[in-house]
Length: 625
Image (cartoon, rainbow, N blue to C red; front, top):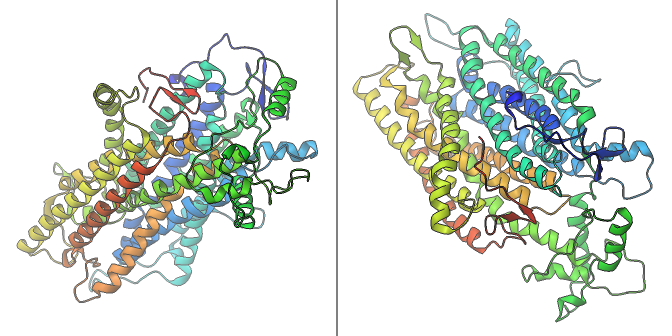
């Protein structure tokens, strides 16, 4: 697969990059570092991470209900909590550390090198935490999970054949399983917040050829994620259901180990970017400085606000090397939104040495404004991932109650039904590229078809339709179960393929939403905040799962045991009402999103308007998926 990646230009220049170092802390040579040789290693690591994480999550609900004997609502919340920890807590921590300061003070070589290796070390350490133990732990991640499924004492006894009674897993047994799941989630969170940013670091945006390669990298990145997902929901789920969980989770452990080895093998080829300081510190400094001077009047002319000295910046760029594009901060134009933050750039004492906690440049203020402008878009994309959470929880539970046979002998594993979800993603991306983009280009004049915000909007609309369709399918399933008088735990005489539309719609929605979000958050974010922006984007996934858990808990508490919407026996519940609730919430969220998207102002070089993004031209060639 790596051999199919675009080839690097053999006639690459032999000069060095001024904004990147090699693994020894020296300026990175263009010819021997970065580009596809390095990016391929990162893509393989991400493929194995996705294979491992989804291989555990997608079939986990059947293990919790069938082996650990938990209820449907509790099992769904365990799965979503697993995703919450992996995509939120660690994204916040790793984003701030991976974008951390480097080279701003006279540090020793080793400390400077450690700063430059921020994203690299984040990926390496947290990938290892999924397989290897920290020195003060006995085991970790997938290894513990494999052991817990193999050791008889770490799972409850099978259900009684005579009475049908099932003993719930004990506190100790659940404790071991939760430890394994959450250690795995820790590794996932640290890796995913940095891997896309580190991959894009391997391409120099000031070089036209590498700039086009970087645009193609994101397409390959999404392709490898989808490939790992496809292998997880087919091969790994089949192994888990037919050979045993210990073999399936053991394969996950081997996969993440291979990914780590491949990633580390590329160390000599990686480019480590010089970062410009912690973005969280910059945001905090601007807010503090603005608050301290909140009572001072703002000047009528924004030019009177303190900003970067263009003359000094030009002189510094000249010292770095003539003819090279400066990687220092460039002045950003003033905007009228969030004028309160402009107070941070009021220079009270021009003769005094400025402190960043009392005085910020107007450019720093505008960068913080950019982040603030992104927050409404961030908040209104959370609900899509709440819908997404249903595909690995209740949709799988529905599948376990339905006829899953193909022919007389082969039965589809319930978790493998998500292959239609992944297949929808892989189908939607080329359809968008070959059909939607040309049509949208002719209608709007946008050379890239839809803008990132338009793509997200399409994904949110599809989530509304998906939940409405899921509710209608569940109504039919309940009617068939009632008419056939299906006993508790019995199979409803209705083909599982009735669930395909909801998987297909959510999968298509993810293809639009995920790529749109990744595009939006990475390109709209200020320089030096790439990893934090990725973490912000990925936190929408975890918050979506959190909202799902909260809704499930609230619905389960309100509907009670007499008329439960989410019953342990789905044939006695009203899961369709839960789906209708999600459809209504998603519809309201879509209207709020449309208002936020209309209000949002792209920063200079708005995507899709003129073929450039933030001064970076985008390739008009067809994308390779």
